[in-house]
Image (cartoon, rainbow, N blue to C red; front, side):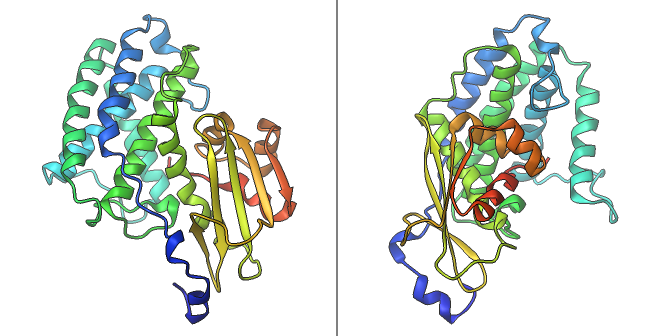
Amino acid sequence: MTGTDDLFYFHPMTIMPPILVADLFPEITARLVALLRSLTPEEWHLPTVSSRRTVKDIASHLLDGSLRRLSMQRDGYQSSGGRRADEPLMDFLNRLNDEWEIGSRRLSPAVLVELIEWADAGMAKLFQSLDPSGPAIFPVAWAGESQSENWMDVARDYTEKWHHTQQIFDATKRASTITDRHLMYPCLDIFMRALPFTYQQVAAAIGTIVTVEITGESGGRWHIERETSSWRQVLEASAEARSTVMMDQDSAWRLVTKRRSFEAARKQFPDIKIIGDQELGKNVFEMVSVMA
């Protein structure tokens, strides 16, 4: 809460619950491994649609995330090549990614798959052992958090696993096995936790509602409400939305996993519609639920 006036808008039944996805990691990894084992040698080197990386680079990136998580969180190991004092966070993350991907290009696809299967089994076990409400080792910056709970940090890792796996499905033109509601809805639900942070600098009258509606099997409705000096996400809107942004589930995950200008987003996603206040709704196009 940001002030006494906010108490008037506090509705206990609308508190956003944690999104618990630790038990989904073995399944999302199994889908990824099955996909990778089905690829031809040529497909491993295809470019991905939403990234400068190849399919092999993306697989390597996913392995890196799992190995780093085990090393740092399970084993308490800190490497010597950390972030420099004058290094912006995004530059640091990009440097880490580039260093790993270049070095791991020496690994064969078969070795990569075996290592992913091994590392992800350990990571799933680690995540399942954590107290969901305990303090996370990493804050989820794209949601505006300077300190996160474990459930949110784990959920962030799930979105990484899901959207990079989907990029590989796209690049190889394979029918996706992860867009069913069981696996995709939690990812979209986590992505939408970036809504209040996206609107942090947007002025509006207290009580103003903005809704994002995603259509499709894995879709849903997400709402934020303006309080005295901030926006808060709520389960149920207490009034009619001043602006509703509608998109299908395929556009939704693509929109929030790559930084782009409003103009570029409008051009890429002509299906996205704003109903009501256009200026208020256009801020959704700036939402980014990833760091790098």
